Image 1 (cartoon, rainbow, N blue to C red):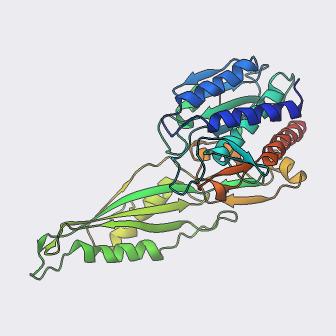
Image 2: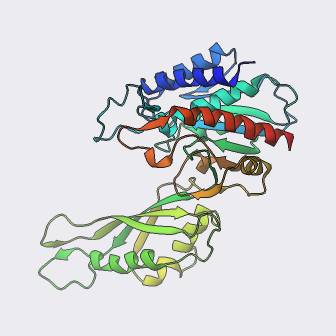
Length: 366
């Protein structure tokens, strides 16, 4: 068995190679090849669909429950504030700079190292499946969500995202709505009591003031925000429609379907229907649900016993496509994600591998 020190050094080498290889969402072919090579070098059979790669522990037993280890290898595009070459892995002052180093390359290589550590161990109480997924940043159709149909039933999961190795035991879901407020087109010089822009005002006010009753102990309340508004093409024409976009961050007390039913209930009245304005509400997707895992879960308790703290995360990850209980945990810090001159501390990767292994070892013993 490789030592943790050896696994750490190999993980850092892989991370540098990943940084040097562009892997924007839906364009991860080359980083997928690097991950394939990692498995080959460790003599681990793997499967691949599109740019997702996954592998099982050597002594997989269909009778046992299955634990998923997952992180992604796609990145966003570098923002204009970069002063470094985003594709040059630069090691300086204990930091490793480069696009995707923090989100989520450090988490991915740390989980891969952890998977290798446990791969050949016999008599594990859980099966392990490691998935290096694509299209996480774009919530694309060919990401982790597309792989789940090929996997056995997942009992619980660790999703690698930068959390400073603290335990994100809940994550808000996302529901984005396109809202079209109807009205009557006319010349601006004439009286028009059915101006869709004015009709939109009570709709905007409703989204701003409505409070969902259930407040999560970890994630707090549901938050609805009107983020875009668009209407009209010229100054002297009242348009027929006003378009809004609403960003809704959903806590773990509600499903996205329950939120939508509150906004546009199947009954003749309720929600925005009470405003007596003609409005059409269309969700962009329904599958990015909130996720959580109880503090009492042995996986969380194993982390707490090692001095880790729990919290709720407002940012979205591949947890949103999982139906099982899941924990978000990984080296790096979320505030560095998508930032200029993104970096991760080398010792965060070292600590991440050690803690992943200790948490899983204690979890398997519980």
